[in-house]
Amino acid sequence: MRILLVEDDELLAAGLREALGRAGYEMDHLGSAEQVLDALGHQVHDLAIFDLGLPGMDGLSLVRQVRAAAHTLPILILTARDGLSDRVSGLNEGADDYLIKPFLWPELLARVQALIRRSRSVASARLTAGPLTLDLATHAAELFGEPLALTGREWHLMQALMLAAPNVIAKRRLADSLSRWDKEITDNAVEIYISRLRGKFADSGITIRTVRGIGYRIDV
Image (cartoon, rainbow, N blue to C red):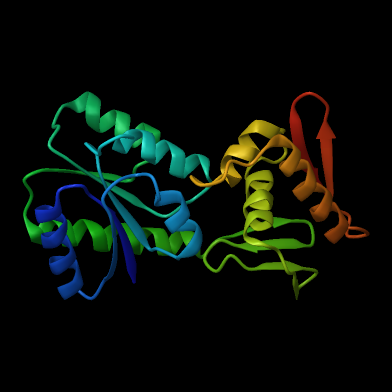
């Protein structure tokens, strides 16, 4: 199991890597938020641990960006802020749990184990739209029970459309969900991906409709 740690305090990060490593977890460590989305796009993580007081982009903004990019892994926030409003803000932005510094290692490990256990029961679920199935755990896709080849961005685009169904999802929101820190996706790029997906779903009964001036909707 692999954990992404985003913590700028090198001493604390070293302690977290050692404690979680002893517990059997593989660790990836970043000192700031800039490369988080890129890391999540290139490696499968079971959990993310974010410090709230990061340099540059703070932890709450980072949580917001990760959720906007349709990443569903559990997020544990570490912070020295113990106010109720801070905890509520973190949870409302999409964090799954909140641990106040200083903390004891057994409590950290217990929370990590609980979050991963809970997420695995959720991640076993699948999204279905007519003959199309997306596996949230493996990022695999099937059409009429047969494997369907989708690129990473095509898969995330379909996930966003299926989660929004039967409602319309804005084109700008789709673009944001596909973007990485090093490359912003334009609205025109979204149109290209939508065109490719329509080609893959020809004669399947799945239609990606354009709602002029707003975005797209998936119909079956």
